[in-house]
Structures are given as structure tokens and as C-alpha cells.
Image 1 (tube, helix red, strand yellow):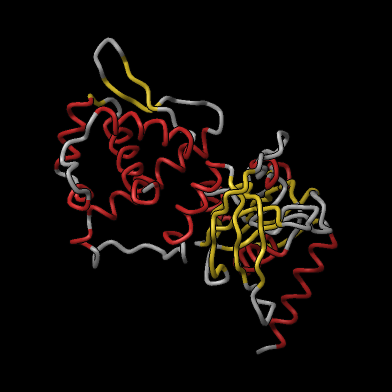
Image 2 (cartoon, one colour; image 1 turned 180 degrees about the vertical axis):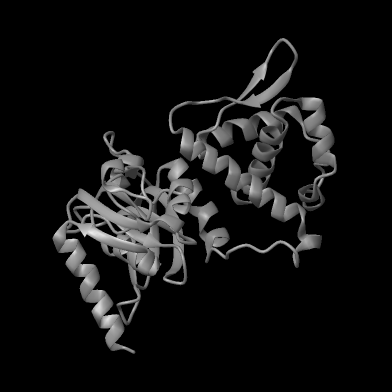
Length: 303
């Protein structure tokens, strides 16, 4: 049942967020005309009990609090300054998901990037995290010939380059590992075994020193400088590669801009730099600059 309600939670969040403030009566009217309604038997009307159950589930699942202004009876999503960027991204993503679901008659005119297996595994994982239940997953790495089955405690989810990943502590491991929710994830079964997330775990801080999902490597966070062609400056400014990105004005001129970061020079970050082609040059550290140069030489040898 919780899985069936997942889309209804998204619809409710998006409807309230889109309107800003809305009464229960208005929500009920919207619900009567919602496409999801056709799939729910004997629930043409949005009952107060169902509505309040959904509010509690949304708080547990998404960390969003739907409040009521008692003076006018209007509901709204509470603005929480903590995790503001994540909250903004979440609302935008849920809004886009709802828009696409309601615009299926225009499917040939709205193009978007596919996210493998997100619909299949996300509801299962989100509910398991909310309930604090251990999962049993069957997973086959791209580098292994046969799949393996693990019991694991779920820590968090992260979206990167059109793929969802989950951070989980598998039995027998000392550190949590990242698993992709694509064709590598063969099966997930939620067990009855309960677990508690470590009190000191912070998902944002865990990934803060990295670009992407490769973490816990021998690469330690360090100062990285790159030189960017001036024509690419606005692309970097409008969508920074990392939250530590900032311009080094003293080293920039009219032809190029120097950006500085503090992060670990992992494989993911190196791939991002290489994907920018000749518009980006690594300045420091020298070890990372050499890694990129070696890859460029190997690429050149292919031609």
C-alpha cells in the first residue's frame, strides 16, 4: 500500500508547493480531477483522515512539513533554512515528476533524460529507510562475473549523472559503500530486522569533499585550480561543479578564468574535467594535472 501511495505523496507536495497556500477544500477539488484518482477504488473524495495520514508520511519520507494557517485554513510547506538547496531541488524534482505524469498526451514534445531503475527501486528503498529496516539485496558489479547477495543498512540516496545510488553498510564491512540503482541491482527484499542510523552520520558531510559518488579513496581533499576559457565562464558560474568553487580573480584575465576548489581529485572529477575538452586546463596540484595529462596522451594514442 505504501508503494501505491508514493505517487500520491508527490502529487500532494507538488500541488501545495505550486499554489503556495491552499485550503483543504481546494485540494479536494484538485484531487477529484487528478489522474491518479481513477486508479483508487472508493476514494473519489480526499478524506480528512487520508489527508492527515499523507501529511505524516510526507514528513517521515521527505522531511517536508505541511503546516496549516489556522486563521484562514490554508495549508503550506514550511520553509526550513536548513538544507535549503536540497529542499529546493527536491521540490523542483517532485514538481517535474508530477508535471510529466499529468502531461502524457504531450510525451512526444517533452524530452527528458532517462534515470535507470529509479521508479523500480526508489519507493522500496525510501520506505525501508523510513522504517529503519535492513534490506537484502542481490547486486552484480560491472567488474564481477556473478551477482552477490548482501544484507545491508541503508544510509542515504544520491543522484549523480542520471543514476540513483544508495549508500549502505553491508554485513561484514567496516565502512558504508555506494551501490547503483540500475541494472546492477537485481533484487531488493525488505526484511523484518530493524536498525538505527549512526547518530553522527550526516549525508551532506559524507559526500562534501567529493565530486560524484566515488568516496573513501586514497585521494584526500586538497586545493585544486583549473583554468577555464572565458567563453565557458558563464556555464561554470550558473552551474558550479562543487559547492567550494570560487574564482581566483588575481589569476584571471580577459581570456580565461581561474577557478579553485577544495575536494578530492577522484576518478569522477577527472572524468568531468576531461569532458570539458580544451576549454579546461588543470593548474594544480601537479599530481592531478599529470593524471589528466596521462589520460589525454592515452586518448591521443587511440587516434
